[in-house]
Amino acid sequence: MSAYDFDRQYRERIRALREERGWTQEEVANRAQRAGWFNCRMQTVQLLEAGPRRFRLDELRCLSTVFETDLRAGTGFHGRHVILKGACAKAHATAPPGNVES
Image (cartoon, rainbow, N blue to C red; front, side):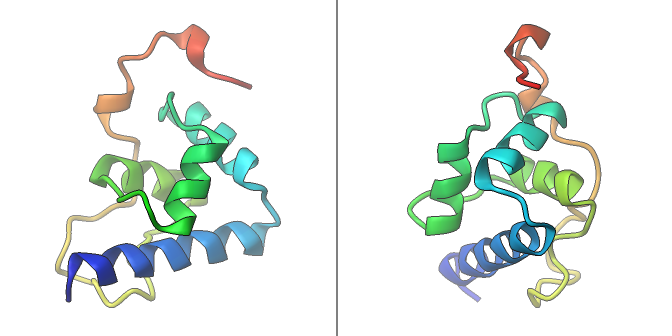
């Protein structure tokens, strides 16, 4: 499977999870910020869902935390990638607490 397929399947999964919960892209961004992805904005979520922006592993981990699920479910990537469910990557933990929106 190509990187394009990987991104496309995660893109579809994230949009479906967001819509199932009735969340806006802004709400996903706010929840991601509270979970530790301090520079996540609505535009970030828009770009991830639309396709021009690639996913980073730490972002997928954070989104797994936000949606309280393993994002690999339903993508065909079982066993091929690290487990995504869990806390956000420490790469986002360097931002000062004042940068987190409520």
